[in-house]
Length: 280
Image (cartoon, rainbow, N blue to C red):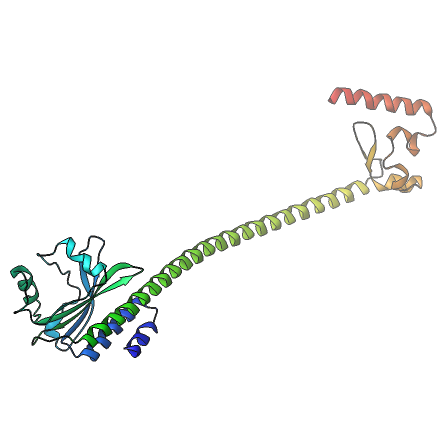
């Protein structure tokens, strides 16, 4: 029994756990058919795995409906009680129940509940289909021990499945966010490249404009509304023997060209004020 329990606990994949259970129990008890029956929420259910010695006894996947079934019959199983029938023909069964078992070629059966976190998950069922069988106490107790380990393994497999689902969801979210981040980075890169191109164009335009201005010997300057000189072409400066620092940042009337005449400076100031009022 300990070896079987160990084999059951070695896997965290539910289908492997269930199949290992029926395979090993059939080898141990040498019965004709071993199956695991899983309950649905409405207490119907189906055979989810089986092991048999003759394919004619296969009932895998069948939704087993007992017409004699009553909900109260679940109570002993929910209380972890075992049910044994040594001989269907001589057992004190209702005709309906006897007919139901005969329909599955059952001569004797041993039914052990499987509890998962104290809730009835399903049944571990052993059938003799050829002849009746007296189930031994050692066999019953051993099967109960196995059912306990199966319940634990089912719970662990369920937790793992939930964890894998959550991991898959998280990975999907991370993949989406990564894709969004990559797209944002791509958009930003495109924006940076476009801005760099624009800055290059502006720089080239300024360079070209300065070249044009510097080819003109007549003074060309840019003033603020207050009359402050902020730009000037180079040739007039060279001719006057002055630098940009001598004139840039000064009021135009105070620059080198008008220092000779306070009257001219006054006229320039007045003219600047006049045009400022017009354009504002």
